[in-house]
Amino acid sequence: MTDARTPLIAGNWKMNGVAAGGAELAAAVSAGANDVSAELLVCPPTVLIAPVGAALRDGVALGAQDCHFAQSGAHTGDISAEMLADAGCAYVIVGHSERRADHGETSGDVCAKAMAAYRAGLRAVICVGETEAERDAGKTLEVITAQLNGSVPSAATAENTVVAYEPVWAIGTGRTPTNDEAQAVHAHIRAALSASHGAAVSDGMRLLYGGSMKPENAQGLLAQPDIDGGLIGGASLKAEDFLAIAASCP
Image 1 (cartoon, rainbow, N blue to C red):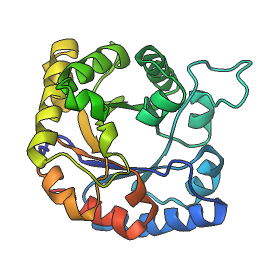
Image 2 (cartoon, one colour; image 1 turned 30 degrees about the horizontal axis):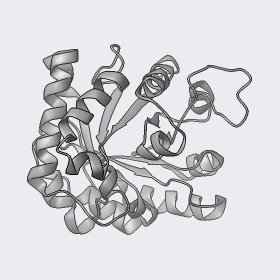
Image 3 (tube, rainbow, N blue to C red; image 1 turned 60 degrees about the vertical axis):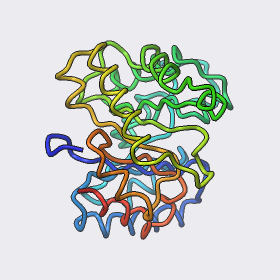
């Protein structure tokens, strides 16, 4: 990362937690926020947004894990970006690989959700990443480029968008690419964004690494010039681990 981009450590709690435990975890993260230089973000399940938001203190942003592209309507079980903003969220994750795989979301769907986030005044954390089969076939950069082109709206800026690279084969498996491999993909993402959105947007946009980042490997990953933080899954469920990762930022 560079001094021009403030590192962002984002916790994706996924489908974990209940109100009491979520508020306790949020309070513990908030208690350590002043000891790290990175911006912190937690994204709890939708039903925990209210108690978690109430437990957070200055220095930790609140986010959601998904949103619908419509502002309102007959969409049973869905949540609009406007509802998330009204609940106190500042960010929303869109296009996570689990949404793409489990719910059949296309890059077009992801782009529409990112646009909904902008409409509501939220920052979109847009996820891209290749499967193990695509990696083994040597298609990583091809897949990433296609996902970026389809998922990142033309209206994306460094202020309203964060891009997270999450190699699907590394999520929750304990496997990670080497530091050099991760940096190579992030450098490719930045170059692709420069081609599509211009150098100023690309240079200012934060790129996160997601996929089994933990205290033991965070320092090496976060030292790479194009890795500006992490989208943390399992390690975000323990305040000590989450804050240790944040403390690893240069």
